[in-house]
Image (cartoon, one colour):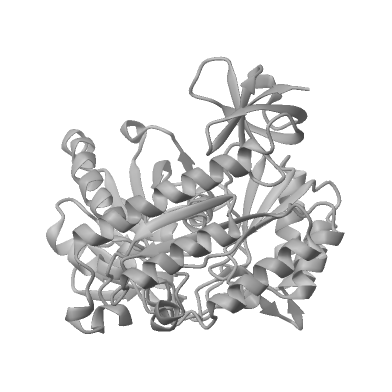
Length: 467
């Protein structure tokens, strides 16, 4: 990583490893401060935020929950859709009020959006001192210190991808709660035409099994009873002759671990061996995310998803046969270039055929640099048509989800209590199949497991009572 980080200085450029040490890690700290990190996007970004917090903690930085208390503010970003980037741009404008009160504050943008348009952020957004892509976090502490000390200029752009950076040897500072995120894979080798991820996170990089298992053991020792294994296409994992089924089985057998989840898998890599591990290992939750994206073969081919509708449905059937009672969720994109009304109807019929427990529904968002933006302009679906299709898809899914969840009302499920709900006196938790349940109880129950009777459902969530 050292060779990839070049820092701007008065009179030239210098590598991160040559930067005068501004903190003495682990002993006396000449410089320390507080850091506030705001996270946008997927679970991978949550994991990266915890990684950055760990890197900065090594340099003496304490994480705070209020930007007004921070010496350093980092905004960890997503680039998967335009709406996410617009939210970040608006938020960067809001954060300027803290700089107005404290000009010495360091404001940085990290993550996928920084990787995609970091140079533009430095040139066009007032007050951004640092942009760092997903492979640039190892030296974040030294770089932030350098800016604060005046050893390096503001306006640092750390945007080189590193095909070897898996952050081996670094520790994370985990957030509150009973669940821990454990990244097993970074980057992606699937080149879906709509997706920016391979261009902002680089090719697939897998951690060794021993590193993953050691981190899971550390999380359990730290009081976490549930872990979620993270990867861009997590079930394509391969390292030291281990595939993802091997890794999942080993993690499920870590002493003291009660639940294991994983996200986000690719349908092509859902093997019979993986499903057998899910069925055989008690700690593995019977829940599987299967991103379909479309129900039309013509659209799937244009997306380069590398499976057909029939093959996707065969995977669904296999999962339900090997893991009885498994809960399935999916991603759907409507309005992809060239999507016809019959194509869209095929997606609706896929939802009706599978009857997913949950679904994340979007209309196509073009990302500069992806192959989908090079499709013929005449193939673009008009915005009003795409919006109408999205609304129809949401309406259909909500109806299906309500019917699926009504069938569970009166059942008793084991719930891991995660946090207090917005409504006073209520708690929120999740069942093994990832269903959200709200019920009355004291905050002292957070982190524990209870048997809860599901008493009602709104469709997306359940109300319950302790059984």
